Length: 479
Ligand code: GLU
Image 1: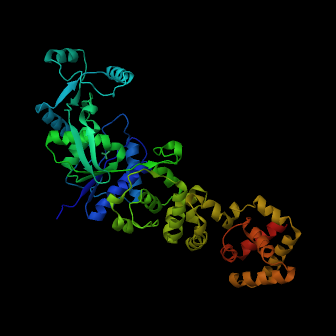
Image 2: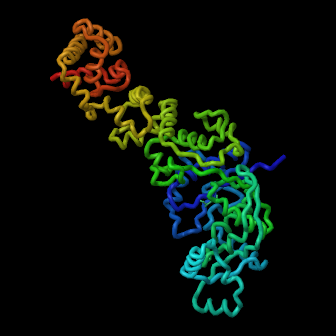
Image 3: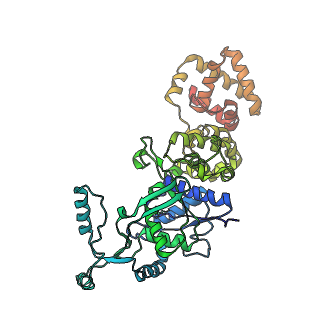
């Protein structure tokens, strides 16, 4: 029996979690759950100038919010830690020494400016920009001289002329020309490991069986395979999924709109909807299904079926799915998700009777596309938020409408306290008294009760407002 897969999500905390990276995390997570394997979270924070603790914190929060729980990683025990690269520097140092001993690396003293000049010259002469190996064959005394000038070396891997080949689970057989790459840096002049170096060591030492990541890493994989060979490590299986694109088919970025998980969270997208949507993109599932629970995704997922071409991100579709998730969410749970949005819109949730709020949310939830819209859907139930829209005002200007509202109120003032029955009886009375029917009957009452021309079922609004509030509003709009 094949060993259980071990996969990892290895973000660099240099910004907010992009939906593209969240999708990579999702693919890894589902793959692990589908096969009963292990999902590892590794923080790739060796670029101190770009990494920030706040990004790291948000990253963990976002993954938790999405429900992508990791089995090993920060705040989890695991036999392969530490799971933060900045805490693994000794390991990288030892591995650099191994390659030095094998004479597979050399120190490079070129400065940024010198490298830029070389790049520039190569581009001008229409050649592929890469490092041409200036420091590869330095004599010992030349090295000493450069060091005496105060230069700190980076370490470069000696690339041999070769064809690098690997089988990608989505893309099939891949081939790269080694020579075209140039000797690449594995340890920077500040002593920090470069991505391609650290990732190979970590993936090997952490027993990663499948590396699942975006296709933007394909050429990195070629470099990494050279390092696997140099160390004598067996390479894992590589899986490069397509990227998320904007409508113009370029890589999804800020100029297309919202791109981070945090932004969608703030807009009131439910995590289940976002996960469902990201899973749908690139259709890794069966038979065109669009709404899928997490468990269904885990069962139906097959990486091999993922599309090779980029998937276009469609915010409209995400909102459409979100509306479905909101509608089918248990009202008690939905209220928990809604609380921060209610507070933000100026509703003091602690001061609202729980049972009543439950009924209100139950009534309006079918109208929501995002949680952030909640304020403008429940304002009709709060006197201090009650407002009459311009459209509604036009209705109230009609004499017939005023008569309808007055008749409705007349009945209520004399009726016993039984909201459900009273509503129907008041409608009947109004109809008989004014001979208004259909829209002419209901619209004035709707406008009087809610200040709007659209809204939830009127009998339910009536019951939730209670007769006193209804009478107050009838008076307000007809005085
Ligand atoms: N830290 C890399 C990134 O965020 C990881 C890529 C990989 O999965 O190897 O792009």
